[in-house]
Image (cartoon, rainbow, N blue to C red):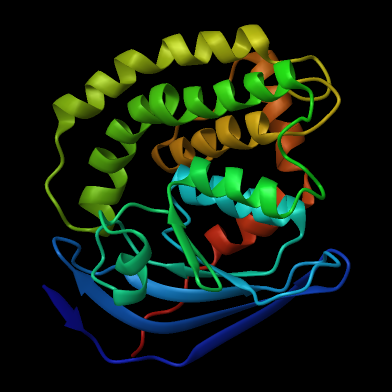
Length: 265
């Protein structure tokens, strides 16, 4: 079931970095399935690459570590895209056409559609090999993909138990929380924290001199955990995460996360 709400007309324009413009337009408010008040917001990013073609469309809420990961990859590559913010399982027809199970993120690139962040990033690397986020060397590429898998299926798996039950569910969707599941996630996280601290470099990035998908995927989970007050405090991890936060791509996405449109009077 979906419920259409009155449209609003609010636009915010900001300029940052090399004169790049980001336009945020609140298009409508949609209630889908059990989500009581998700806001569908279209955000345009013009990119700064020399590529040609129509801007891609990304579906999903930026609070998700998987959606954030994809947006950071697009920013690192300088590719133009539009982010339509909506929750998982939303009944938006364009979204469900490319994500039949309602998973976020999903990507529309012309006539081609795909869901799942890792699959989409693999597609982007093949289609736009410039400014790669995956190393060319086989062992390094395998390691980057391993970090991506770790971030998605181990680190985020634990963290989302806390994020959903203490923030997204009760505060955004007005759903009851499962505190036992949140506590379970808390008990699981120290193992991931210890591992990340053991591999975090004193300088540079997780795979050496190049910033890669490995850094993007792991840092994206930490950013989502910040919504429930969990931040990296182990020294090597904290220093590495601070370096990630200085990248222009990270700062650009942080602007989007910080923007909260006012409710219509």
